[in-house]
Length: 324
Ligand SMILES: [Zn+2]
Image (cartoon, rainbow, N blue to C red; front, side, top):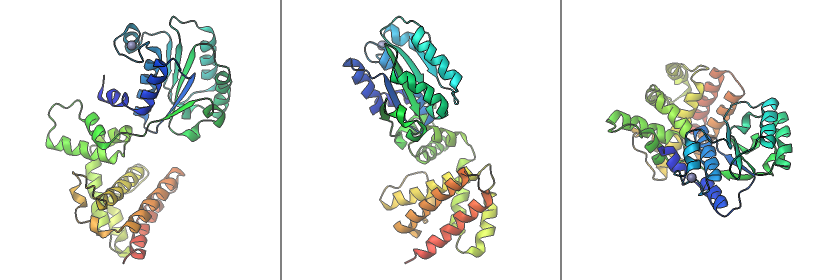
């Protein structure tokens, strides 16, 4: 069992399904909600195993062993990013007509956000009159990605995310004796993941992340007036490819400053020393709102340069307006 799996087997969604299984009260449809792709996919698989194993996912019996080997017939897993009407038709046909050995048959669809409305409507008909002995384990990045009519047929299970300590454990799982540099990179990625392992792994794999982080902080530190804006912004060379990364870094920086004011100073972010005292609570809240606005602008494909201007001019404005 990997560290991620171990952590997820103590999560609430997992424990709920195990309890349902052991009390003989399995629902015919579960929906696991998490915007963390790795957590959601892994949880769907673990939950499917718990539903199929007579002991609620013991990890030792024949059923569990076969599932681990990918050889269990009564388990079908769909982890595709896009699911079409044809895919749904195939799944429905399979669920009605294919026989199976055990008591139940489980279908996993981990990316419901990738199933378009037409396909979801088709799928709904099966959920309304589910075939005997079939359990559906669905996953979605967010509730709004799933039709309300489907939602009402599922038992919804929210995964609330990992702690930064848990993410650190996953990131360094395969490193026997991590050196200082690895510890630092893993600590930073773990904190900046904000509970999301997929996001943290992406940052951990980006060798330039630490450098970009330091650069961003130095720009913020030197940004004292609009006169210096162009000179400072030029250092970041913001374009379409790095904008979202910088917006994540901006969010991280100001969230860390906010957390530090409440007494939670994260280790491994020396650049922030001295910067923490410069912002009071209302300033930080306003800046975090501003960053969210910039993220929405980026989602609607606004020009990267004008988003960068909005952010940095906005930070200067907020600092000016909130000064004591
Ligand atoms: Zn088992």
